[in-house]
Length: 451
Image (cartoon, rainbow, N blue to C red):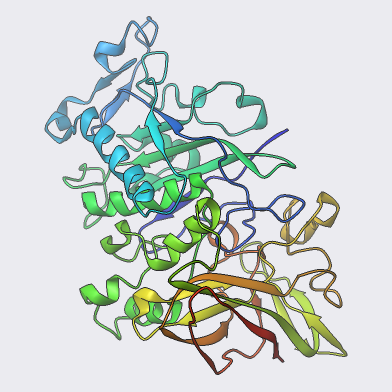
């Protein structure tokens, strides 16, 4: 059975929430045995539309097929007033190829990509015909295409997310998962260039994005399509950057992971160490720890605790740790290996790859969404709920090990899993340093926290 994992939207300085969960930290989802979903056949073939990368189009009923109308924009006439803003289809082809090359060229992975045939029916996908190509339900997964669509006038984005959404949402993407076997079998992506410089006159004053903004978004969204989850490594640094308390220097910009849920800087068009390690976790060709690296392993527990779901509203709920009678394994805790150079810091989430079954799905999120590994928030650890393993630390380097809550704002479609809602209320920090020894897994034991 195929299952569509929710489309992610990535926007500038704020996030539009989706209604589906995200599961582990690093991988976008795990199967019932706790194995990350990933592509298993290479090269991955992707299929582009044939329309322009940027340039508005007006849909009209022309009384002919899209194939017949391909010369006039696949059934849509280009708006005369903005012809000078049109960016060629070939630039879009080149941009997509460069983004896939960026992920491929991180090295030590099996990743490989090839451009397949253009989409059929003229291939110019727009608000007239996008439903033929954008997979939003299981019943639409019968074709063999992995469509990548240029929403050149923003109207596909507006149709899906509401009027005006194209002013802020630059892209969305998602993989389609085959239940039970940990395979990604298809993907799709849409990139909106409506307000990319030179911005269309319909964009709000002061709202425009650069081509490097779009490249950062493309790298992020295609990361999702390949199976990557969001990341929040260096979140405290990002917070002070966003508040204006710290000036964003080129060096600090390198500390922001590509998979952070909010577009902060165009430097995100280059993968951070954390992004690279997450991708190698899925597709790596070397067993960890390998030459030049080490690993960390341990468990997180909360002493004298209980956990409650604080229900406020659909996108504001969270789990709260309070004083209670039990010692609980804690999933949803970020374990950070902090380096003096934040571009080298790494993070994983406890409980990220634990077996689960549909019977453990909870209505607490308002739908058949998943709140955490089975029984993780309800008693002693049944099998790895508080466990973590981090690979890819550099031999000879020293790291400070800390535990962190997931940012309360990063929930729902922007969440960092295995919890759909953040887990808050436990004490942060840990206070251990580790000097990485090559080809060694450093056991950190059980890290205890409390309310």
